[in-house]
Length: 101
Image 1 (cartoon, rainbow, N blue to C red):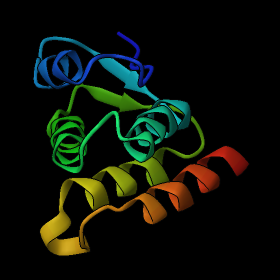
Image 2 (image 1 turned 135 degrees about the vertical axis):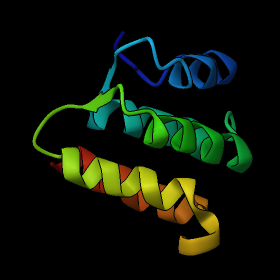
Image 3 (image 1 turned 45 degrees about the vertical axis):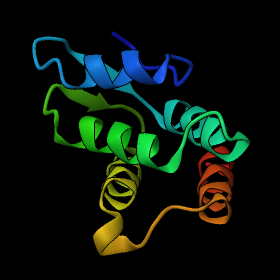
Image 4 (image 1 turned 90 degrees about the horizontal axis):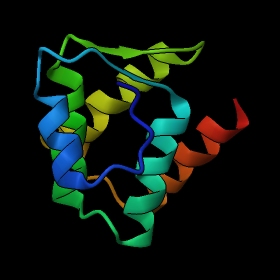
């Protein structure tokens, strides 16, 4: 199942924790989720939960040349106690980086 970033938060968290599913995502998926966060559609807590679910599930494949960057960004977002809380400014920086690649 391909993650597009347009899924509902509840659906995305549910499938991300379903280890039987093989999920794929790329920079467009993460950028779409972050755009929803910046617009206020997804809360900070929801963004952390989504990133955490995607990061810990070994059946999630991050595709494309930016896979290492995306995995690092998922870790950053999923661990605010280590990396600081995600805010709109940082999310916009990440979106710009992903869109330029």
